[in-house]
Length: 623
Image (cartoon, rainbow, N blue to C red; front, side, top):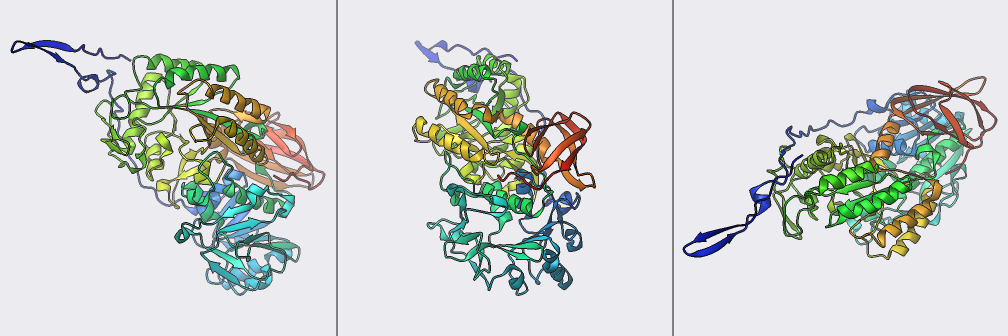
């Protein structure tokens, strides 16, 4: 890499006068003598994700019986993968009946099922199966689920879960209330069904007093009816469209999506004594902590070395989202200069991830046009004209050019992105994919209602998934809250998310060294050895490999065998089994170790793996 020499101002003599000519360096000569990227970025419209992508697996898994392929079933599928529950998706009720637990989604009624299917499913619990039904609205449902009438509404604002749930699961007071709407935006309240006069105490009720979740024992099994559409709710979070349902934007605990997933996992584990799931935190730690820094102000890149040295001294890798600003505009001077290569090399030598924070850091990024996919440095000239006006910019330009510059200067592949001000255009997911990124940390827990990663969708819509993952931010140092108060909230947050293996992404701007570096030290001290700590890239690669793991359980006379398929190499994957299971061996040998009752952690593995257990009892931990 070479930096162009900037011409000095020139003095010339005109008509007897000396005239000073000042050459604007970024108009006359680019800062760097390279150009690119050379290849265009092409966005190919995706077809809807086919049900067949999720139809493989044994009868030990949860069966999702989809009664409408055009529904929001993809949100349910992504949520179950996130929480680690194995499942298959099918439209064949006969196949679903071979499983121990069936989730009929999105509607359970004679209007969408044949008479044969309806009768077989209604009889399923009598023989010991567990039936979970979304929108059980037909007359034939009343006796099985035990209620008088399903009452639709778009005016209910909250759903409150009972303190105690199936399998002994208990929710904190901050987890029990699920918001369905905002009283100031009644036109957007989610639709729901309420069940009148339930025969057994409801598991959740709406603010109008009707039951939201009900259960009933039936023969040897159980039947559950859900009045809130779980798939739709989860998909709103995945598509960053849940901000109007949250209590806050950031720096608060917002677990509504996680609460629904934990409830569903508890029902499955209560119904199936052989249910096995995947843990959410590498090496079986209590929670995941990701430290990130946004480099978007003068001196921040230089200051970042102080943070990186401290992090390296604690054995921590963090992510540095760096604004690749190379033009002077209304907002600021360029952030990249002749020192940038050395500073990036310093961060890299300390083990830190270099990631993109766009070119312009514009507050109106979500309004940018998509662009052509041919934007290149140095011809790409985006400029902020004033606070709410940016000219010459595009989504693809911000992604392509920032990635290219950081890779050319830093000599490392850039895999992660965060936009300025966490702005999120609808085209962002497919633009990230087209430009070679793998991970995003552009949303917040308040916008997504989850403290866990999730898979992204094309155009932030309901039909087509992308092999991209979002890691929403939970803590931000720029909110108008004293850092000591943020630290107190962090302590509460990690106590709550540790109960189910949540994730905490922390955003710190290194525009100053103190008191923020001291704040970060206190965060790490509070996390202690309970946390797995890494960069967005570290966790993203691990999560990507976890996302494609297959898990099936085989019952034998000698005990149980857990069969794992691992298409990508992964290390530190937790496998959660009933605590009454006693681990005997693995094939290949030495690839798993018990770290706690009911939890094994895998070594570095890929391909196929079998875990053998002797069964002593059905006990399992509730999380």
